[in-house]
Length: 130
Image (tube, rainbow, N blue to C red; front, side, top):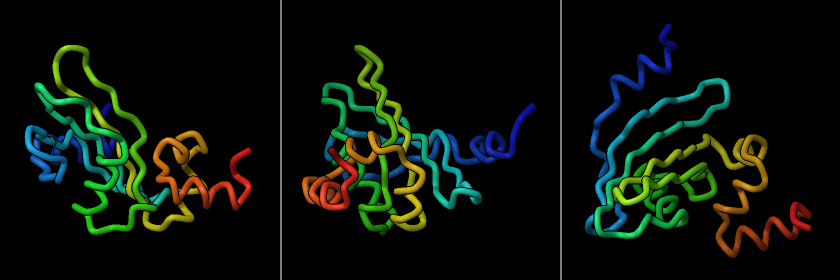
């Protein structure tokens, strides 16, 4: 049985996404879904980078924030899974409606992985890091 998310993903699958990752990186949407309950946009992306390294998490985060015109603090790269020897990476990215919502839903380890040095310093001031 297909869910509403599956049906919507079928509509968005295969669309090209022009992310500023540099030459040699091609991004295709596998699923673009807005989760109304959590108030976030959920992107499943397929990144082709034959002969190039896997994109860095921060670079992908900044590219998505720039492409969608949102603040960096609202974008989180949940996972990057690269297929060995293929030059293909599957990425899961969440774009929240506001940063407070992101802090309440994203686990600490995801927020730390995505943090810039400034964000890490801010997290330390808030007492989130030991």
